[in-house]
Amino acid sequence: MARETITLTDDEGTFLSLLVRVGPATAYQISKIYAESPVSNFGTSKGKIYPLIRRLRDLGFIRSERVEGDARGSERLECTAAGIEAVRHWVKEIRSNHVLLEDPLRTKVQSFGLLTARERLKWVADARAALVQKLKDLEDYAAEVEVPFKDIVHDNAVSSVECRLQWLDRLERSIEAEVHLPSRGKREASGTRGRALNRS
Image (tube, rainbow, N blue to C red; front, side, top):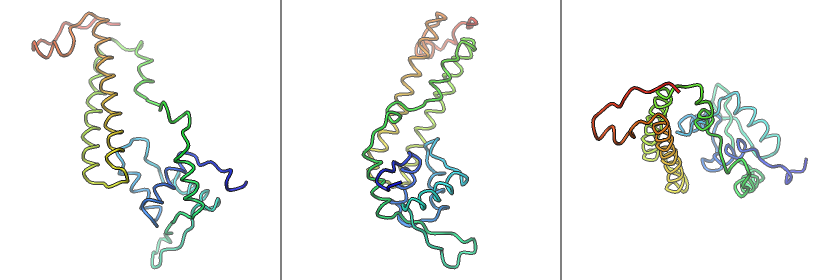
């Protein structure tokens, strides 16, 4: 296969672009960056990274050299000129699966018919708490890590979480309207706990 016809997968593009940014690095060092990311689907296991490295090396996008004095036989990886060009092509390409990302929360709501109204509201509260915690995690991560275009990248992550929180607010109001409950805001303002929820 001619090198210029190769299109990187998103996993390959993400790995190569990270290697370009951090410079020569071992697979362990790269996997540690993956593990510390606050993005839930960014984590990549060793069982996934090493086959990825082999494929990228076979394609001529990565070169490696043994780390002297390392008893484990670690290799220092570096992106080749062809690898950098492949990353440039990957960055410029917007695919249909980049536009509306998979969201397990959205998928789970489609099975809300299996839950009572009380269980649905509990689910919303739990999801909200997790998202609020994720906002804190993002702030902590941003304070500790330097990445290119950090402010723009951080703004995207925070905005995405805030949009999901707003969606949860609308979902909660919809559930409360369905069972004729006052909204969460009114309940909190009045200090009442609200009437018992009917089963859906």
